[in-house]
Image (tube, rainbow over all chains, first blue to last red; front, side, top):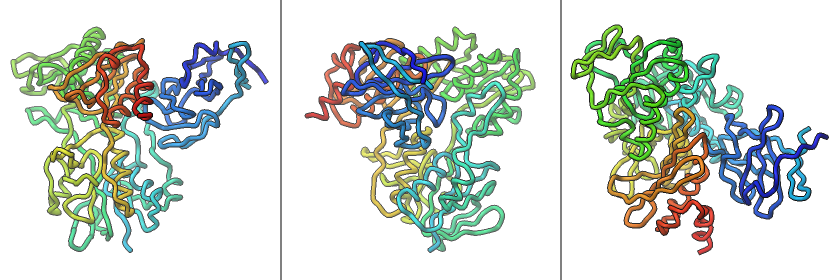
Length: 103
Length: 401
């Protein structure tokens, strides 16, 4: 398991998302209303749109283009046109630093 | 049972076919498409990858089979007999229906001037292939029509090093669908990118090598593309005696003047609360109306109430508009970190919102604005204008109240 530091927790808005790029791949980090942090693949599974630009409400993120919706905790596609689930990554927050297990 | 027949296999017809199954409809579903492909998405046609225009299918053959949707590819409807509930196809076959959905879409409006036969349309996959096969570095294109499609095409062509002239009959581009503030910003960006504009100009003739404007100016062009809007495909409905106007007229539940026939998407003019019939031409509307029509055809009763919403990408800028603003509405500007938003209020009530910014940066706030519009509230304009006030907190206050 490779852990990388993505950002500071304070850089992600509460009930919001932030894009994180690492070694040619893109991820989306989410800070839930309860301040827990999650990470999914960065691009929507319908078309290659960055999900971090989408609206986060509770535990869901909505694609900013075609309005597909995912549960960012599990990656589950909840609304069309998204039908393929997102890959998710383990996250830990240590001393205000967000770390992601990328592989 | 003869089942449901859907005429038109674009975004709307195809979505309706699957939505019928999601709504629990178990009889035969027949989807009739005129084009020689699987149903495909139109938005990617104006955004070709470096290797050319890609045909992005909406669904696979397997998905159609799994949903038991009978897909007639490359087949047009020729005649609709509403008394016998019989649809005759252009290959001479006929299908009976219990209910029918018209999702016939729209066709490009055509120029009628001398030389109009030299002009390319931009609607289908084959249109896009024809246009982009000629879009070589240094080529000269004239685009007739400065609406959303013309301006998106101009931006993509500039990215390929094509010289672009946009000719528009109105005094400014994007006048129909885009609020004036953002139309002006997008216009300015196109000028910066080197697009030449000929505004307030009609077309006298098209020749090989030039477009001749009504004032006699010759605009040099190796290729001329027409993007002057679309007309709804209503000929089948008209010939069948259904009520039509600027589209196939429907009630709020998308039912036409025949109780067994519905219409949705670009071809449908839907009854609004103020008594008018309005037709919308965008991707989300096609899908949302498909879902409403499918649920009603499957036996529920729902009205179509989705707020109109569309996006347009030009260069690195993304425009999003939710709701319908009118010239008389008050407006409030809200600065954003990578762009700007504008809200439109009718006697204090939030009616519409638009935003322009880099990439998809305005998407979140437009989505929240759409939910605020749907909530029917009259927000304090000072709060809307203040970027430090989170729109989500306004929405939560509404929901808590």
